[in-house]
Length: 602
Ligand SMILES: [Zn+2]
Image 1 (spheres, rainbow, N blue to C red):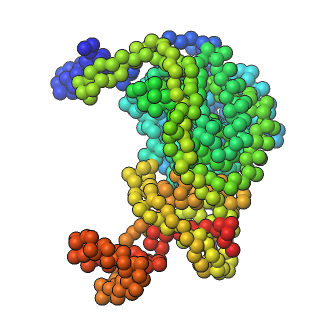
Image 2 (cartoon, helix red, strand yellow; image 1 turned 180 degrees about the horizontal axis):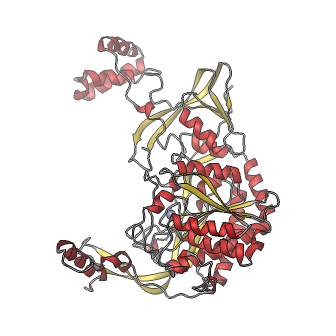
């Protein structure tokens, strides 16, 4: 067995930590030393880097892309650029959970309101390529002749979106990323993953960003990440909501797939990069199993962009490529995107308008892996690996060799499992303040009842509801559902959310209980699962006896008693079983509080 190079270093560190007289531990190089070999690379984009004594060298260039600047240094550099150029303005668009300002840079030639391209870096703070690429591009726009990129569009650039996570830098964060040396965290100060938070909007950063999206209504929104997964030859990859294929809004998805993808790929290739559509591995250990494509909800930047009708791009640079190569690739991608948005702004505006005017009759709410591939990648540029027996895991682990290989890989898609027929409107009780607050934040239109009203509406009852493991500050919920028509007296103050509005599909994704990113699925209504407080048994027993007057229930009860001795001898179980058969056992218990006004309801 060849000794994995990292092992010696860990051993040295352990020795150093137990014997204080030892020299400084070589563990300093540890996460980087565990990475597979680098693939050789050079490309035309290297010419974007300025000479070392350039007065406008960025902090990352200054360090030869070994390190990335902290917030204070980033801000100071941008303030200097702002002071030097009339094209650059620095603004704050909110505050993080720990009170840091959320910075944006606007690059604009002024002269009225041009369509905006919004670019954000560091939603996952350790994946920070976008920040250092953006600084270089802003410099070249402001001072080095690339101002024509702003002839038809403004650029709004968020250099560090998850700023609290960004400042928690460590070389042990994102250990699989080849640089920079120290990186921030995935989550924010409350460990909420901001790229799961768009729909539920719990984090102050998300709330600020959604307000910014509404204010700018960009024609293009780019979210910069770094991938995980297997080793491969590709360095810059990107995709859209549901890989475009499964987008809910077609016109913007078609523009992304038909115009953005081909144009940006070509520019990246010309600059020496190896781009492809972001491949999400089924199984990193067995690359031949292929890549997965699936629909996505509005919890994600791309899903949210899809639901609000804004063309949105997910950039996923490959983690094992050196930081320098990744930053340069991002620069090329952003420049190409700006140029294309400038050319295509009328087309994009038309696509957005078309999506926002569409009123689909149904919405897909669940899906499962399709039994057969939906396509093939004929010549995937992979990297070979060998295996070795790891004394740590006791099984064979992968050791990527750096040897380029070509793979044929299936694309595994999804097939629909369930859809909902979308209603005319949803009725939200006034007491659901958290929901009404989110509707307002997202810009979803609603009206408020000024006087009471009687209506027949669709009520959803939860069956087999089960809370899931806590995630991103919430306790998600899974359930099955039953629908029934009920006559209700809606009090004044009840909120009616019509489907017929530009954000109708987003409203549906949030308010339809079956939708995977609905408020219910995120666990917004824990009260409906709280066990109701019990009355005295001398009151419950006669009520349960009355339930037995129903023949069907009486028969089922008798069968249960006969077949289950433990049940027969448990008075509380018997009462619970019977009382659960009441038409409405306890007000609100297991009833989804938001009522649906269907096409049939009057
Ligand atoms: Zn990410």
